[in-house]
Amino acid sequence: MPRHMVELDGSTSGYEARPDATERLPGVLVIHEVTGLVDYIREVSDRIAEHGFVALAPDLYEGKTASGMEDGAPLRDRVTDDVFKAKIGAAISYLKSRPYCTGDMGVVGFCMGGGFSLRAACLFPDGIAACSIFYGRISDIELVNRLQCPVIGSFGEEDKGISTWAVDQLRPAMERLGKSLDMKVYPGAPHGFHRHTAPNVYRPEAAEDAFHRTMDFFDRTLKQPATGPVRS
Image 1 (tube, rainbow, N blue to C red):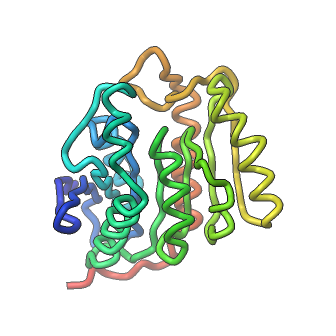
Image 2: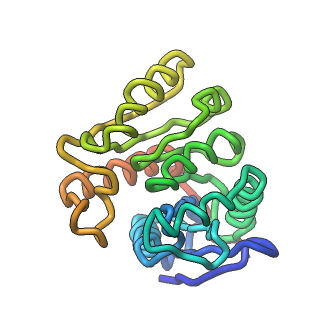
């Protein structure tokens, strides 16, 4: 399975993983947590590729990583609106230009990246056709007015602030606007329950259920009956 760092534009790189396949496949952007493009995000990207997608994790921090919120917050704060749009736009353009990608594209993100995944789907409605949120939120709920794709969300019951936002703000806004949302709140699960590298928060059953729900969702929304051969 090819997997390597790739250049997306002059200032942005990303980790790409894709199956050994002869047909063109849809793409999935994988948006990292506040800690940056660490091994955990690469492993998630690899798993997504194993499910038949071209996975691309753009590095929003330009090579820097953090151990947690304390040193990650300053890196996150450098991802201004303009920086975010430029880097996500570069990632979308990169995947759409690949001969092994159909151009159909989803996005999934975790923690900070969960909010960023929804934000990306709202800001790039013509580029993203499916969105998966893992315990993330956006500050401006009015952004969902721009959303054109279905959304699946996975939240932890013990992650009170974010799960409350999802129930009290995201779901009503999506229902009011007639937009598609499949949301699940996992009993007893804390923030970060999918992160297997953090034993104190990892919840295997919730993690696997949420991941497979996401893969099934991407199968339904992104995969066409016949994707065609890889272009030369």
